[in-house]
Length: 129
Image: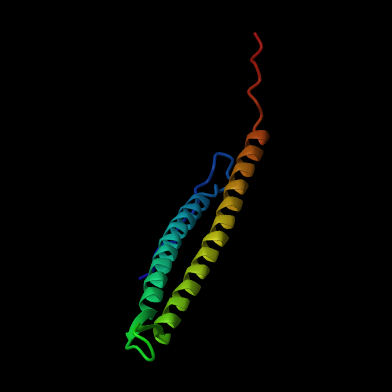
């Protein structure tokens, strides 16, 4: 079974195809940016939680005096996990920045092509009486 070819653009009155796919690409970029920002925020929150879990104070009995000694215990696997989540958050923020640049360039190109198309169409001339 063969499927018919999919047309991604429809012909304009001038006979040239319009770039309908650009709007869809812009929408996909916005969705990707939102998802990446949510992922980056979740990664930062997870990194903070993992870091707080990795550093624990522990009380030891007194050695020489009457006061107990408090030491900081650091769990390396939790700290490595927090570092990995921060790295992931940085990569997601970089992806958001790249998609933002792509989205702005796409919008600028669409505005420029709309202006050029408007300049190419001749203005309606007044009819002689």
